[in-house]
Structure formats: structure tokens, C-alpha cells
Image 1 (cartoon, rainbow, N blue to C red):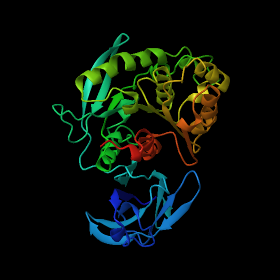
Image 2 (spheres, helix red, strand yellow; image 1 turned 45 degrees about the vertical axis):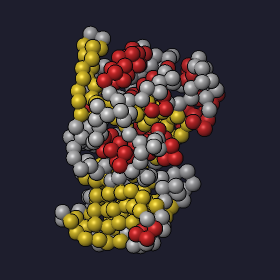
Image 3 (cartoon, rainbow, N blue to C red; image 1 turned 45 degrees about the horizontal axis):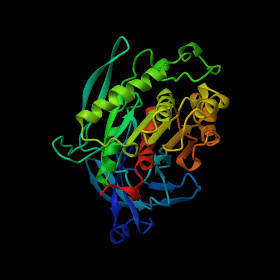
Image 4 (cartoon, rainbow, N blue to C red; image 1 turned 90 degrees about the horizontal axis):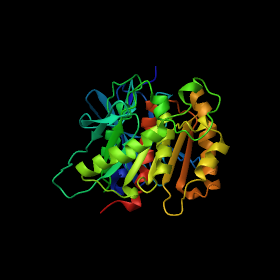
Length: 381
């Protein structure tokens, strides 16, 4: 059984303090590791997914607290974007590493962002078709409705999987903890709005009907998908409600969509339908492979990208059969967009060989998506 670690990353550390970090760089983002098993040896490897560069660090051993051994070290977030922790020879999965990451707890449910308190959220039910749909609204610490301070909004599919760590064996996205961490390490501010997609009709409501479905298992669940109805619901009902009742920006630069699997393809579709509202799209393990490239190009060529070009973040794994099936669609979307007149520079595609189709993988890389929506150099003053 792999050892369980806890990782806490804090704000940028001064060069004078960082010198205590073994063979770590002399400037960068501080990383604290808490080892529940008091391992004989802990190593940290930082890596760059674009260049392949790596650097291994032996963290400095600190005190024991809460029956856990503490270590710390650092790395330059401009040089590296992922980290792997090795404890007595056992490697963690790759975890997002950037200046917004504030912490990770590695538990039996996977690698979870550290938070001082559990996420709390409000619930709002909306009329949806012949039933209702629940929307979860998370507000960060310090949010004050009477204040004039405005917040960005991240609209996410599968809202039932965003905040409750007991939702399944892989836990949840811990989206609140990641956004709160970003806020504590930057000038950016955001709320998270999650739309529940736990019904038996999920495959249909999160599938846009843009052509013939590929040959897949349960093909009938995806044919004639009602993704347009869902898109209209988000754009015409959820967004206006949020903008009326919360202190949020209304321009596309401060509004994003993010989801995984069927939620990933639907977020991409909503963003393509309404680039005037959503300036960033996160598609994790997206179900693009439901349609072939010709169908995607035909659809995308009907869109006018002359005025609005959202930033698109796509990530996909290779470590299970479903991720392998989705991989071609994730890889080809950048070229499909380019052939449709979309700027190539606005598309980021990250392929993670050990990534699996579950919340543990999406949670580990969600802070990476946050850097796409909130570039560090554009932090709000």
C-alpha cells in the first residue's frame, strides 16, 4: 500500500528562507510535506510537462506535528508545472504545481487540496424541463454581498461532485479549496457555481447534437443529445440569476466553464455557443470522441471567432480504457479549432500518461486550469 502524504504549498518564499530547502532552487514557491507514516526518506521531483525538464529535491526535515513529520522545500513555478512526491520509494500521482497552489492532503481518497475548513455552499433549484435542477453556489471566505468587490465566476458541470469529499471512493474535485488557495496567493477572486448532473439522463443532457454519434457503448444514450437545451439553461437562466444576486463580473474575461467527461464536451460546446460570455473553457477528459473530426470541423466552421476567442484548456489521461478512447478526440481538437479559424495560441492541451477517468485525476490538475483562466501577470489590483 502506498504511503499517504500530506503536502502543503504556501506563498512565494524569499531567497533567504529558501536556502534552508536542501538542494532546492534559490527562489520559487514553498512546498511543505507532511508524512503520516514518518518515512525514512522523502523526495520531491518537480517537472515541466512541456520541456520534460525535471529536478529532484531533498526537502528539509522539520518538526512533527499532529503525529505527522513535516518537511519543506521549493521550486520555481515559471520553470515547473507539476510535482511528484516519493515516500520510501512510492510515488504520488503528478500534482499541479504553480504559484496558486496552497496545499495538498494525500489521503485514502487521493490528493486533496488543504483547507482550514470544509467547503460550505448554498443550493438553488431551478425549473428544468419537466422537473428541477439543483445548482450549488460556493462563496469564498471574505465574500460580502454589501461590498463593491467583484468576483469572477467558474461555472462547472457535475456540481454534485465538486464539494463533498464523501461523494464517491475518489472523493470530489475540492474545487472550493483550490480556488480559495488561488485567492490566498494572488489578487484574483472567484466564486464557483456547480450544476447538478446526477440524473439518469446525464449522457443526453451533456451531449450536444452536432452530427452522427460514433460507434460507442450505449450509443442510444448519446444520440439526439439535449445539450443545446442545457446550454440555453446555463446561459439564459443560471448566469442571469448569478449576475443579479451576487457581486460578479459580467464580461467573458471573468467568466469560465469547466467540466470533465461528458461535462467536458458540454462545457466546450457552451463556450463555443457563447464566447461573448465565457472567456475560458476547461475540458478535462472531454467526450470529444463521440464525434469524428469532420463533424467537429463542420460545426466549428459555423462559428464566428473574429471578436471573441476563449482560452481553451484540454487535458486527458492514458491510464484506463475510457481515457484511451477519449484520447484521440482530445489530441485532435486543437487542429480542428485551427482549421476552423480559431487561434492556435489560445488552446492548451496536456496529456498525462498516468491520468485516469476519475475525480482524483481532475482534482489534481484543477489548479492548472486556474492558471489558464487567471494568468499570474494579470492579477487584479
